[in-house]
Length: 535
Image (cartoon, rainbow, N blue to C red; front, side):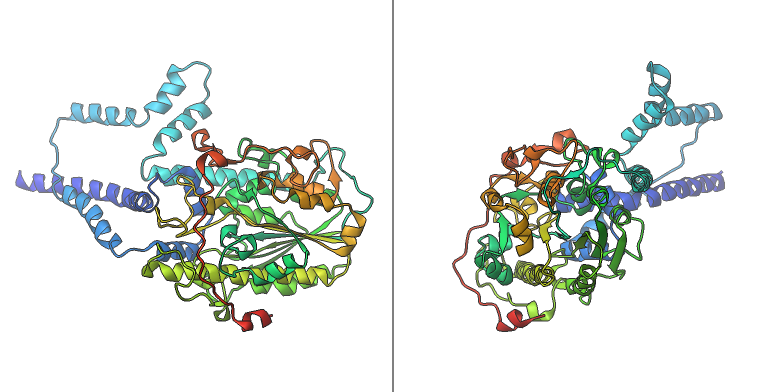
């Protein structure tokens, strides 16, 4: 009898151990995400996880790592281990076994059963959806369901993008100007908060090259532009298509910016220094396949200090030399993405002390704060170098630069935080630079003086495709000039921020954020003369 009890206890513990090993990793992820961000590990977050690679994951861990994570992990793990050790077999008759087995099967699958059998006018798909929705919040089903949805979206996106290759989807697309630009350049920045750029009034000289170009009246600097999402993939899905926070599905059902430009006769080259993990099939890499030419410069598994954004300059210069009559060149930078210390060469480590640093930035946070400013300083050189390279062609050309989203790096005293958190938004996460450069030939062929009168308009780059079409000089059925930042018919639209898949999270930018800019520090900081000679 004693032997039977021992065997039963061992069998019980084996089953519990297997269940625990399955649930433990997902539970740990959810707990530590809540500790860092103070929110549930959501569907949107799961998509971001699946769109990240090992290097990005390791950088995330190192950026947020705290020594006390270890004891928290040990305590969190010790509790289920203690419970497991207390487990004892329950001796019941065979009838009760079957009854309990049936009951414990019905309970978790009740959403499916109730939808399929008890509700009218429902399908099996409706029942499966209801079941997955109920299971999704619990570990490990949050990861399982999230991955299933991710693969479903990837499959749908791949099919729809492939379909887009075969058709010219825009109705009545035509040039509304006498001469379209020969060269259009779209520079996509990364994680750059304009409030940390001296071009936008920041007290540290983080953008000396762009400052000089602005002083020479070479740039149009738009000062009140925000992004709809603080994450790259989710933001670009709206920025580069007709999708917006209220209509995210339009990314899949309507044409996108690349479709539009190809239909207008432009040859497209996509140059990226974002990690693609040997062209792994991510949303953004799949999207880039719509271009005629792709140049993937960062196939490293680690975002090490050798992969700086200057690598985009040679292929960019080569793309400019293309003999195509019309060309669109998209350059996607790593910009100021964390970990910030990997985003600039050592010569750009110009901000090293607390000169000009807000008083609330303590010694343990100072390095990150300075490194972000150093990354912005290097980014200034890259963006200005792209502009100067385009300028050297002396053709009818246009260049637009903005960042996909901002980044908070200890900008506010009441919540010392570095990164982005959609559930706790701040202006630093959403305020982005938006800069336009036009060649002399472009300015001669177009009346763009009124563009300069638009630089203070409130705008969300969720509607960028309308602005971009207007700048290039295109018109089509469905063109919304009220949504074009530079149009004489411009009307301010609500600047929604939040997750489009969660209506409750969508808020107007002006309602959520009181334009909380960090206090200006009066201390001055001189940038090394070596920086001005770089490149």
